[in-house]
Length: 341
Image (cartoon, rainbow, N blue to C red; front, side, top):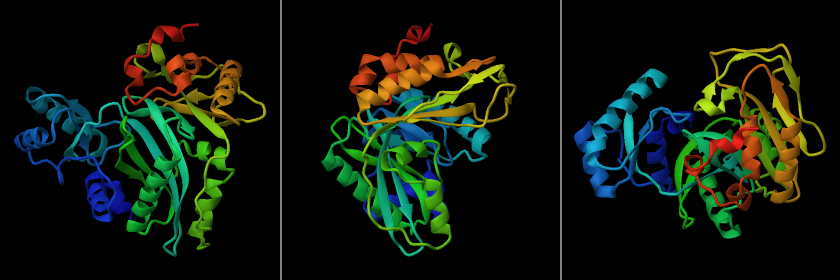
């Protein structure tokens, strides 16, 4: 099952067979630039080139016209080869003004699959998520049912066992398309845990032990949000900023959760992902959750290195974000000067 979903081209083919909506694009890997341009003209620009073994935004390039295709193709292949030792590239229609909404699923050894509702991961830069929340401010009950059914169908089509995530792109008209599946527990799983009061790690262990799941779907009863605290210089293109943490004070309080491994005196190495903590807040409403997150961010102190905390503070005050009016292109218009304290 992981083999079917670990490769994005194979995953797309699997979803087509299962009847799950997918973004129009190539049937498989592109052979060359000529074939890519032909498909791009058939489905219409803009298109996006994606690495079949990709992740974390690596090997992805947006193309708006024929003249840009070859350079984007060469660049995407080189990055994919360097990152994944696999330079396979496919092309898809680029969905304009999309939301990135994913569904948490759990499957057992007996063919049962259920969903644990959605997370909205649309606040991101270079296809790397910065903030996740549940429920999505863009979601409707009708859309949740349709996407939940599609996520379950996707899981059942590969006899999925364990905790996983079905990721979708949702356009401004609320049409949704399968993007990829993460066949593992994700960074943002605490968001789901907080809104449904369910331990996903425990659930994963139970499935591995052969214990059947309940089979029922879960829906949010609270609102939760997660800010990724990364060791990055937000005023220098979010460049990683490794070094020694000289002072560390974690946010605390009711409805505040911090998952981290760092402490005062810890040296952040330059070799790994730059995320050093996850700050999760929950409340009865989205408005209250944002207020609680603002307070928690004000309390969170990390000195000695640069982090994304100033960005998150500014984001929580942003009117478009507070109203829920955003998509994956949000960071293209976000004024970083608002992050200066």
